[in-house]
Length: 421
Ligand SMILES: Nc1ncnc2c1ncn2[C@@H]1O[C@H](COP(=O)(O)OP(=O)(O)O)[C@@H](O)[C@H]1O
Ligand SMILES: [Mg+2]
Image 1: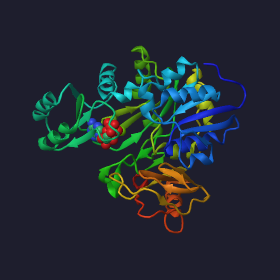
Image 2: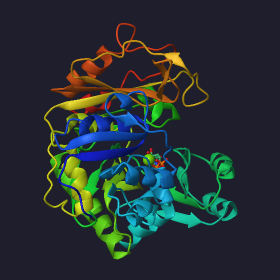
Image 3: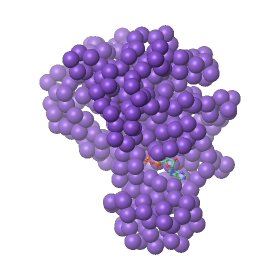
């Protein structure tokens, strides 16, 4: 792929905190000229220009990139990748960061990923795959509990249940469509591990940790993620080396060997068991909210890292991080993750020292920024230590800082990291 020598025009596909954080980081690059977001949110319009094209309108996105002479497109969410946005851009000879439709099956089909891991002996939970509910339930009936039941395809974070008895498993299976995976239940802390790969070589980002449950102490329903921090104290250099050697390098090699060359961001969701790190799933893109602390911690310019993915030079592109830590606390709309309130005015959207306010579910109405629902903001701090980062993030949340009516957030983001210092 040919990339121009002038300052680059970038298109970021998506509208969440992840995309705002990526754009915020790219906007600091001396190599970047202009940034477009499709469709973006109120926050992204302060670091670039929003374009009213949805993330799944891949034909329109390619036309836009061609017409505006975009030099590089970065895809945030999985949906356009699994729809083949990269294949569409490749056809038009437009540079884009992300795996092809075929390679993105590593996320869009859990059965594909599990079979690949089995074939190449990459550590993961034991599993069985089924074409229909009946055969899945027959197998579950003979299993030891707890078991983990998963939908094969994309399910927006609602396709997995850890079931402690048959009745629970049955009622969950009834709700699913498509093929089903049943897994052994593993125990241990979870870590998000992202790498930039050109299909052969890779460079790792800092390990980070998400907080999936709505309430403190990991209680309540699952969400898209209520907060994150990086780095993760339990993920030592030694452990990172092991993850790279036992998981990342072999899966990249396996994908190539299977004719699914994987270029883009690869994100294995890991569980650290007493037998070592194991893969829960692979994602074919950056995590959200984890990308918010990752971009805050990133010392290197992001643009050359993204370019190394499409140019095939990931072996030479080191990724350098700052010392210290970053914590992101998500402020969600009242009612989230269920039905939520919309159009709420937000107070305190100011500049704060060492804290970035990344937007997700925000929009403009009559030039005023409103909370439009879902995850609304990611309050993301930088501190010399994890404790300082926690203090700084929570220090700007509330009536004297960033606030909207009924906002929902966890009080204990990154507390696990302190316990493990
Ligand atoms: N084999 C497993 N053992 C224990 N917990 C699991 C297992 N697989 C998944 N989980 C739990 O379910 C969550 C969601 O599963 P995951 O495979 O990451 O699916 P998705 O992110 O697509 O919903 C994980 O973060 C983890 O907490
Ligand atoms: Mg997951």
